[in-house]
Every structure is written in C-alpha cells, then in structure tokens.
Amino acid sequence: MFAVTEQKPVVYYNYVGGEWTESSSKERLESYNPATGELVGCAQNSTVADVEQAIDAVYQAFQHSDWGCNPKRRYEALLGLAHKIEENLERLAVLLTCEQGKTIRESRLELAGCVDTLKYFAGAARAVFGRSIQLEPGNFGVIAKEPIGVVGIISPWNWPALLMIRELAPALAAGNAVLVKPASLTPAISVEIVKLIDEIPQFAKGIVSMVTGPGRSIGAAMGGSRKIDMISFTGDTSTGKTIMELATSNIKKLALELGGKSPNVVFEDARLDKAIPLIGRSIFISAGQICMAGSRLLVHEAVKDEVVSRLQDYAERLRVGNGLHESTDMGPVISQTQLDLIAEYCEIGRREGRIITGGYRLEGGDYDKGYFFAPTIIDDLPPSCRVVREEIFGPVLAVQTFSSEEEALALANDTDFGLSAGVWTSDVNRALRMSKGIKAGTVWINTYNKNFPEAEFGGYKQSGLGRTRGIDGLMEYCETKHIHFEIE
Ligand code: NAD
Image (cartoon, rainbow, N blue to C red; front, side):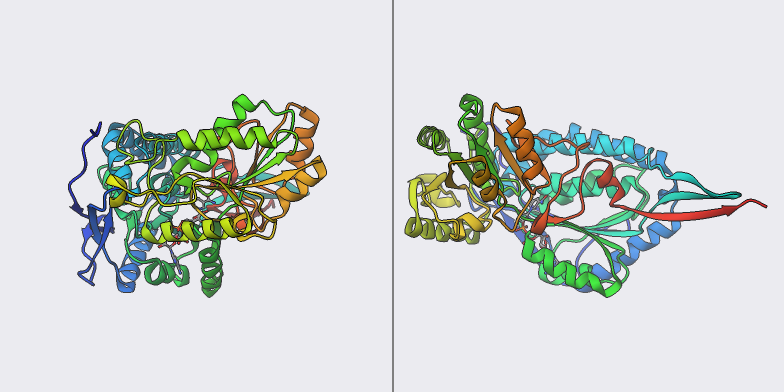
C-alpha cells in the first residue's frame, strides 16, 4: 500500500514573459512514471521559434525592470520562493518521485535542498560585493560586480528540482534574467516550481522564463543563440563538449557541471562501521543516477574481503521498489534506455571481472511495470575496463584493490573525471596527503555526499568548468568591471 497517493496527469505550458503559453508545434512531450509506466504529465514540445521568443522576453525583462539593480527585491523574491516550496514540499515530493522514480525520502531531501539553497542565495543577493583600490596618486579604481544579462540554464533529469534551483538561485541573486530548459524526461516538477515563481509578485515579470522540449533542438538553440550571454549547463560530459562548441558563436560565458567516476578510498585503518553504510549509500542513492556517485571502490588489500562482503550484505538488504512506498530504499532507473545501458556495462563486467552481487534487471510482479535493476558490485576489473573508466549512471560499484598509499592515489587519479572523492582513514596525516593529492572538486574525509549551499562544488578535468554553490558559485554569474577615477 502506498503511503502517499499517485498524481493525475497534468498538461504543462511554457512560461514566457510572465504568461503561460503553448508551443507553436502544438505537440506534447509526455513524461512517464519509471516505476509504473503511467503518464505523469504532458509538457510543451517546443520549437526553436518558441525558444527565440522566450529569449526576447527574458531580454526585455532584464532591460526594462529594476531587477539587476534592486538586491532587496531579489532577496524577497528568492526567500518567497523558498517559503512556497516549503509550504508545498510534500505535494512536490510526490510528483518528483512519480516523475523521476527516486524514493519519497530522497525527494523530500532534494526539495529541502532547494529551500536551503534559495535561503542562502536570498541573503547573498544583498552581498554582491566589489572592492576599491588606490592605483596611483590621485587614481583609484572601483572593481564592480554586475549581472551578466541573459542566462540560459539547461538542467538534467536526475535531481531535476535541486539542480535547476542550484543554478537559478545564484543567477537570479546576481541580478540576471534567466531562461530555463529542463530535461525532457522531467518537465513536470520543473514547471510546478515555476508555477510558484508566478505567484510571487517580487519576481519581475518575465525575469524567469521556461521552455520545455528536446535538448538536441531547443537546448542547442540556446547554446548557439547570440542573445544569450551565458549558459549554465548540468549534464553529460559529451553534451557539455557540444555546448562548448555552440558557445563560440558569441563567446558566451560557460558554467559546466558534468559527469563523474568518483572513488571511495578505504585504508586498512578506516572505521568500517561508519564507512560501509555511507559508501553503500554513495553508489545506490538515486539508483546510482547521481553525478557524485561513489562508483569506484578502492580498498586496501588487508581489509578488502571484509569491506566487499559487508557491502554485498548492504546491497542485498536494500528494498528496491516503487519510490512512493515509505520503506523503499532504491527506486527504478529513469528509462528503458538507461536500463539497457546499465545491463550492457554489467555484461562487460561479467566478461572482464567477477560479479559479486546483482548484475541483472529485476523482474516479476510490479517490477515488470518499471525499470528496476539490482544493486550491483563487480570485482577483479582491470584498470582499462570500461566499467572502471566510464560513468555508468546506474547502481553499479566497481572494486579495485591497492597495497600502498601511493598506489591508492594513482588509482584515484587514473580517470578522465574529477568531481568528488571519499577517503576513509584514521590517520590525519594520510587524510591530508590524500586530500591534497586527489584531483577532484570535493574530497570528503570519513564521510560522503555532504553538500551545502555555502561550500563550492564542481569538477576538475572533464567533470566541468567553474564552480557552483558558495561565493564562487555566485561570482560565476557576475561580470567584473573596473571603473577608474582620476581626482582633479
Ligand atoms: P544530458 O547531457 O543528456 O542532458 C542534460 C540537459 O541537456 C537536458 O536538459 C537535455 O535535454 C539537454 N541537452 C541534450 N542534448 C543537448 C544539446 N545538444 N544541446 C543542448 N542541450 C542538450 O544529461 P542527463 O542524462 O540529463 O544527466 C545525466 C548527466 O548529468 C550525467 O553525466 C551526470 O553526471 C551529469 N550531472 C552532473 C552534475 C554535476 O553537478 N556535475 C549533476 C547532475 C548530473
């Protein structure tokens, strides 16, 4: 029995210039519940013409409102949105679970993250400081921080609410106008949040617009538009590379939050009682569909057997099912395509390594209605194996063994990605050496998946460009201007 009720499908419109509009295509983009196959919502299947119209509306709002020079208004608007999400949290959490598949507990966590992020950047809107500097006698400069202008935000489906808000909040706090394109698989939750924006009078009309539709056409049109001053993209590394090429049209500013293949490095002196559940959670949360998933386990040979056996036990105890059940630990993956991809990687793992647990689609009963995959651990993989090197975006943990700190560090850095890492040890000096040596934007010591709006997040190497969250995350959305004064 469900603890919460399913949703009725709803038609969602684009939000352009403060009005709800239909796409000129008159076509719909349907999103389905990945646990049950039921229709959740129908959004607009927008065209390039719709996008161009929306960009113009956002530009007009930026030009003709006081948004860019009224920090207090921005503070009130962002705080207002935080409160609206808080008031609607349970309703939105149910929709998020129905559309994306994650567990209801994960959905609540994601929406609470939205609230926290909005509150932080509401305050930050009133603290966009520049500085002044004496340059020579009679000459001083004011180094001012200004909004960039029109920002396009392109978001992924895996944490669709938080990853949209994570960029929307600082972009708006800095005084920009924003056009959002959510992922095609999760338009409903994104439009529901924009509906709350529509209820808040402090948002200047048109300062936030949203169009839904396919990335390859309308996302690409945003990437290539000369009227958009900056693109903030969160998604796959290969799509990020395409966006970089498109951005050359007008040398757009770019913020890219891309893929990962993050290691958990477990030394022989790690406190395993704490480490095991957090390492398990790091790979199986959101069925592994999370950029910072701890998808590689690097473990010292002295504790290897114990760690793997305890993680196997953790994986086999997870209750996989419809995320609406309060007791479910892991929901389905997002789509048939994703399910097939994960199964393909497991086949490679079976050939080149040894499956410890899982490695198959879950079948029978309610499992047949959705895209459920067993939590999977694969051992004895060579470092060249694709399961070790590529982002799978599914509940698959690749295990590698080391015998020295040098080897652990080399394995941790033997990747094209550099998003995050976990280090598990009781030796503080070793923890410091590893945290300095690992080339990743976040290194957690004796913990994992700890994120805060005030702490920067982002990637080294092919995991991205720039930083999100924190003061650096706010500054990504600012231009810097030197205004020079000569005193006569
Ligand atoms: P994706 O790249 O397929 O899609 C992301 C967004 O880009 C979607 O809105 C999509 O419609 C759009 N898009 C697709 N093709 C496009 C194109 N040619 N031009 C412009 N836009 C286009 O990614 P996804 O499958 O939605 O998300 C999963 C990926 O996102 C994983 O690689 C994951 O690691 C990454 N991710 C990174 C972070 C981070 O913070 N670093 C967070 C979450 C997800």
